[in-house]
Length: 283
Image 1 (spheres, rainbow, N blue to C red):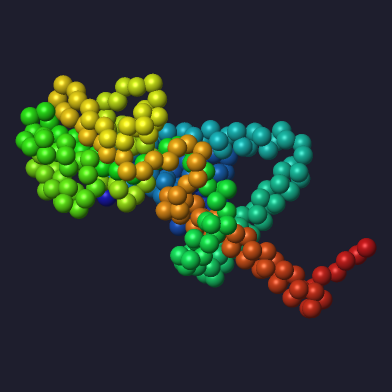
Image 2: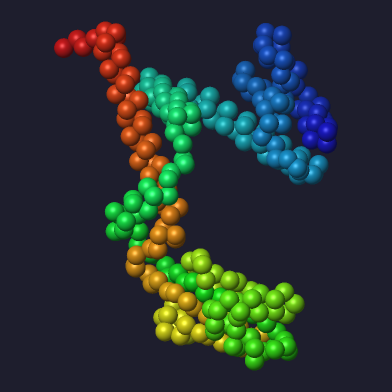
């Protein structure tokens, strides 16, 4: 309602456009006219962000309207000074055809193709194409915990974070609820090493090499202790583990299916047209 009021006020106060009866506006409300081109209130409302304050809506409307006026004037001037309009019309027509074809293809893909791929097929594709999946950054599995310097049971924390036994993990899980500032369990999931480095005050020449060589790390600053246990490490350029590469495997298979599907659609249309004698070659 606020936006409607602001735009209505704009249309009355700033613009006061009176339109000739010779134009059919299709029930829309004109805001601005430039050489017979109209910007309508409904179009402005359609692009205005929601939610938006009254002041911001006024600024947005003023900016949008000025841009529309400038572009309309420039377009009219350009049409009068561009000699080869036929070439532009050809390019526009080709672009329009491409948009229509793309929209139709996407509709077909959404209707006919499923993104549900059996896990066995994903794993088989990964095994047969491991050369496609190389790391562009180091990744690790492990556990991280950050606690205040005055946190209780620090001796136990030093023992627990180094162990992957269920008892140690359970103890840390219970401990972290009341004492940890930050806690991350990722023994079962690969994560980029940068996500962990952002949490630690590790100042060495090569943090990746340091963590690879020192799988259990304890750091300290003026307020906190930082504990990291690295259970597995993969360096830059190494083969991506399947679980880390899986999203890319899905995308590759889906893309391949789409290409094959659209290729078959084109072939089917062609063969149908041939049978119905719809294709006439004049050479």
